[in-house]
Length: 421
Image 1 (cartoon, rainbow, N blue to C red):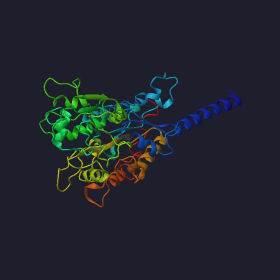
Image 2 (image 1 turned 90 degrees about the vertical axis):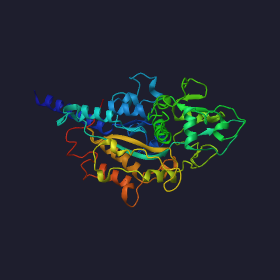
Image 3 (image 1 turned 45 degrees about the vertical axis):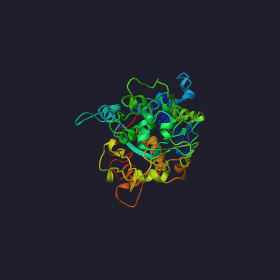
């Protein structure tokens, strides 16, 4: 090979390497999933959602988890691109990895174990090697959220201050006596208008948060915890009835739920929505006398615990189990709440993505007026005890000295979520 050819060849190799490095550094941090926090995430993402920074598409909690666990960016594609061919979609919607996901529906043990088998240990003590070695999975709560109960009473009753007890909530969402007509709900007479319950037809983390409350509030009633409304109510409905029976209205997404209350006679459940002020009892019902305001949700979250000092690497332990507040007395409060959660990796092959994920989490965990303006609740961080959620998460996953820190070089030495799927 002559000197000139060597020089040209070397220049070509160098240029290819620089182009590859530039492409990697410009890679978009791809996210998607829960619709509940979508507006908040789009406002909080550093430098905004754009072609060279971040993207987040609300597709539902179930779809978000699936896209992340299977590393399938096409599953994060929103309606604006679903009808386009792969050739005309943006690159993040085709071949890039899914770097983070939002889900109000917590990981299951089966999902955690399947990930571990595929990407951490193929069997106990036998690490996964090669391209499939992605490193640990991290699940953390992002913000607290109430599930609102929007309503529009029948024209006969015209109530504007609806207050539902646990018993009424159980009756309404199971179509049992006490919750079938508006007179039954209000304890009056003369209004036989059926209560029409609006529900989400897709798998939804908001549905799962509602289900956790109903299981706790209605023991023995047949409700089960599920992100599918049909599954949640199947065992609670009167014999011979289904969701095809009169009195139910299925909608898609939080937007579908929010826009359905232009018609009278309806009750539903809703993620935080700017059109539904949680302190406005004419739009959202009280439950056990409480409105879904932030102070009540903070009290409820503060009574639950995270692993102290990062004492566990189990991602399931970082989303506290639901504990229903008492109806009255110390600790009483609005009972339908939970957290919307984030799934990320500890390790990414592309260091630029590591930086972007850490930057997003840092902004999310810092006190911000944006969180309150979107009707969410900042994670508790009290002066001591078990309520120090934010500081525990920061010290465990964002502090470089922690063994669980995102991007820890000792753990992430040559492994991580790939650049492309």
